[in-house]
Amino acid sequence: MTSHPDAGQRQILADIESERAKLMDEARPEAMKRLAERGRLSPRARIARLVDPDTFDEIGALASEESEAGQPHPRDKSPADGVVTGTARIDGRPVAIVAQDFSVFGGSIGKLGSAKTHRMVRIAIRRGIPVVMMLDGGGHRIQGGQNSRHFAQANSMFHDLARASGWIPMVALMLGAGFAGPTNYAGLADLVIMVRGQSVMGLAGPALVKAGTGEDTDQETLGGAAVQVDKQGLADLGVANEDEAFAAARRFLSYLPANARKPLPVAATNDPADRGDEALLDIVPPSTRRAYDMRQIVSGIADTGSPFEIKPTFAANLITSFARLGGRPVGFIANQPMRIGGILDANACEKGAHFIALCDAYGLPLISLIDVPGFYIGSAAERTTLGRRSAKLIHEWGHASVPRVSVVIRKGFGLGYFAMNGGRAFDSDASFAWPSAQICAMSIEGAIDVAFRKEYMSAPDPQVRRREMIEETRAQTGSIHAAEGFGVDDVIDPRTTRRRIIEIFAQAPPRREPDQPPKFRSIAPI
Image (cartoon, rainbow, N blue to C red):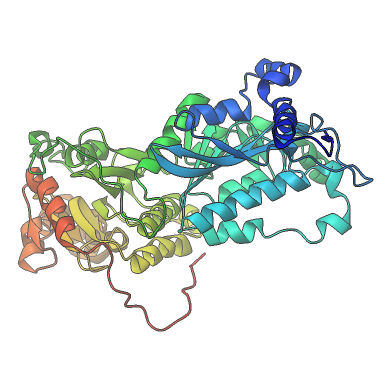
């Protein structure tokens, strides 16, 4: 479109708006029909469902890729160069938006589309606002990428995403195919959501895998939600449809400040700080061999309806959950006895370490609910490099600067007790135990079998003597003895847990003063 040089500004504006209208969904019925046949929404329709009504201001709608001769193609060949970008508001707060358009070259990343995406990340960093990426396409556009004159310079997109980490919340919504570049974007995000049966992600799709390795596979087997959410933990949530994905993204952002320097978003609540949930007295079974659902304890302590679990289907032996206490966002990290007894394995350590870092980056106080029999042991555990992965969990506790409270609910055994921030391990603002707590260096039965086997085997009835020794030892591990030795601050009535934690967080400063040695950085175990 070229306006006549003598045209007035009104006419030029009208011509531009006419061109812009040709790029909107209504002017692209065939493309919209193809998306509908796949059961997909357009990028602009997705944005409208995510953000506050009438708040999206698009950037780069008129961008058009160049032909080989350097001349712009007709805009309707590559509208917006395959990615819709701009700013909007979610719950009244500004966000930057990037949404890939699968109807344009399969959502692949072109030169201008890449520039637009990169610009939105830099805008988000500069303004200190969250960024939400709606990913539905492949990696670099092959048609324009097999040229070193263009590709050799790369760009600083990943550099800036790494810089953004811990400064602004980043959300990746995987809404379709997301192999290659989009998977790397998601890998640096704070929350990754997949739609089951629709989303796939990974470093290469089936065609490239076949060409490079000879392996025959399909998208779902390679990178569907059952793999990337439930087994690998690369994505955090698997939801049933796109509307659930948008709702989860909005809820996630509601717990976080716009950036690491902003105060936490405190919500109004009618839930009394001194509410004592009677059910907390009966959740933990008398027998340590019986399981219970730790999520009931999280719910009993937190503001009613506020828990929002992250990675609920991955490493389910450890719970990581946002919630609110007195309206204030907090993070719960808790062993789950219903899954392999709440033991810490490699995946649980990775999950817990990432969650601690997330909460610490954005200022959410941490509550550790402990019922841990220790670390997973054996050759299978060693093959997962648990020695380093467990150190990663410890590493994150050692670097956290937010207030933290630990509560031993039942078992606090061995190094797992340390890794869950038990006692004085990481200088908690408070260390409590429930009456049901048992704290010792290793499982009681294991300790007797390792250290006292000769003694009980020499008794007239070895098994009777073994049981006696187990009960004698168990009597020394109770919560009262932990308090007598001042390993915990107090043994508390479970019904007072909520009130005590709320009061502690009200008194504690939002951050501790830096007390690290004068180094440049720490080195993560992995």
